[in-house]
Image (cartoon, rainbow, N blue to C red; front, side, top):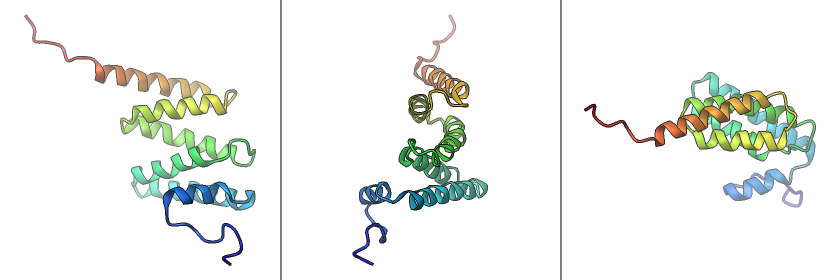
Length: 136
């Protein structure tokens, strides 16, 4: 089994990313689909942070050039981005929306992506604004 590439799961995170990217397409699709299912289960269990990590893995590691993977990546974006807003991870929202606009310029979620981006920018601006001084 050691002579066959991608049969042993690496323990190091950086090697895991390289291992994942080297998977043949059917296996890569199954891994991404499994990540989507795990994320859904994590949400049902109330494990928002873990679910977000799983959804973000789909978004960041999925091959957007593969038509079979695009719907999974887009669904992960649609689920993760509002969660990022709810948990006040505004920079991550901006990065997700930028990614979506770049990779899915004609995507069905472009209007939502713009709304989420605008909301994140508004929240960031509000938290950066100085608190009002005491009334005279």
